[in-house]
Amino acid sequence: MSLLPFLRELEHLTAPWQSAFSNSKVISTSVTGAHIFALFVGGGFAIAADRSTLRALRSDPTERTRQLRELDAVHRPVLIAIAVLFASGVLLALSDVKTFATAPTFWIKMALVLLLVVNGGLLTKTEQALRRAGTLVDAATHGLWKRMHVITWASLFLWSATLIAGVVLQNAT
Image (tube, rainbow, N blue to C red; front, side, top):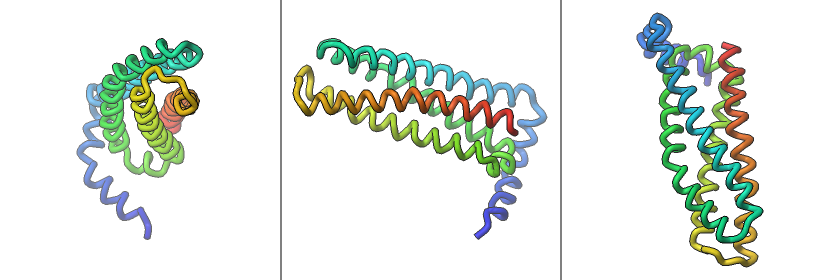
């Protein structure tokens, strides 16, 4: 089954948006600006939290517990930023369906975004397990903190890789 008829239909359905986006500097700048700003805010909060988490991993249980509270506080602005990234990203993709749908870099970026969301889910699940354990220090919590270490490094990599993929995509289209 070919995707070509689907892409043609999607192009037809989004033609008014494509026209508005390409003919209005206000619209194209606003959507692109919202996308970049959301990446700046969401990624900035996430990377700052990741840095603090890596530092807390080398600290005592009290500092680690404090970091868990900080991570909990960071989730809301990061999730809001991800929602804005999603909405603005869809609008950007619909502004040139044929180009984006056939660009390998677009699909690489989408895979990175998916991995970022999955990693965020793992982070939340691990945080919750650590919060339930409190300041308890045992083999189970040690394993959870090791998992947090891996998840944190993955977060740093994925936010950076997603940014780079976005820049490559922008320059390739």
